[in-house]
Amino acid sequence: MSALSDNLVTFAILTYLIAMISHAVEYALGNARTRVAVASPARELVGAGVGGGGVVTPKSPAPVPPSADASTRRPRIAGLVAVGATALAAVLHLAALVTRGLAADRMPWGNMYEFVLTVTFIGVAAWLVVLWKRPSLRKLGLFLTLVMVLLVATAELVLYVPIVPLVPALNSYWFVIHVSTIVFASGIFLLGAVPAVGFLMRNGYEQQGKRSFPYTLAKRLPSAVGLERLTFALHAFAFPIFTFAVIAGAIWAEAAWGRPWGWDPKETWAFISWVVYAGYLHARATPSVKRNVATWLAVLGFLTMLMNLFGVNIFFTGLHSYGGLD
Image (cartoon, rainbow, N blue to C red; front, side):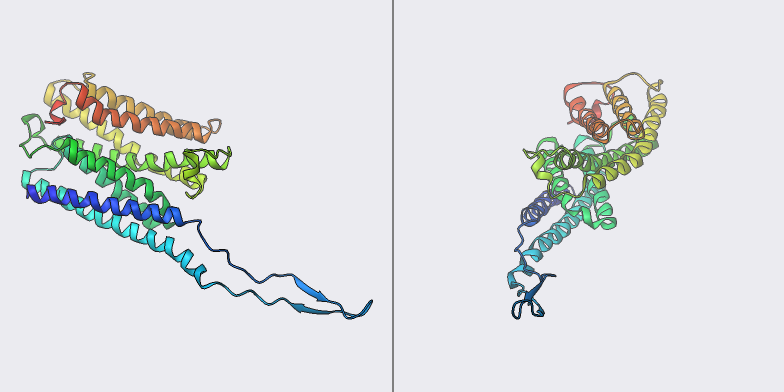
């Protein structure tokens, strides 16, 4: 089971890569469409002598080149292939988690490698739900699959550890309650960071007329308004779950260590993330705060989550060190 899980992760990475390349093809061909001649509404006046009555005849519509349909069909086919590959990669991703859990005879959240795999799966699963509801956001999939390739490949190549039993501190029903909610919220925050960055680029391209890199990458993204609304919806959904996860962690800490809060590095950065995300939601609800300013707070919140996930586990030691690389 363990070897099968490892192979499934590898196949998932390759399939995410195929999805990313397909999205890139759609993105590149999106505006490469053949100009199509259309019938002109104007009418040509043909005079019959000076001062005489004229005969009005409509102009014949120009023929539509056969290549025009192909030029609009190719990007759509590439986009559909990308979505199909993303869905297949998500299935492989889930199968890798299930087989890992069966091999370990526990939930697959016992170390940093398993945690990253689970968070990324939640992110891509949430993306497929969003895409099912709003197919017009498909081009955002290029950036989502890029994030998936980077994070899942990092987990497999850098963070991988063999299966080991849980340490005694994790043998509690609070393990499922606390970690499942923190994983779920983190996965939604991961997804929320993608339209947040997309909005900042698209807004710069639309409103501020910026035509330099990376703003030019956003010219084929959905509208800035739609991206900003999606960013807010995802964060508003995830924040209460994240709040509950932090509270559940404090209750678990009281039961396991005799104190609910001790400013352990993991706890400290979780609190920092909570404050930043709360600040984002407050700024988003304040009419006087510009949407791009508020969205920068959402991006900052995700950076603090990455610090809590990678930086704290690698550079600090504390009561949560069992969730690290070993």
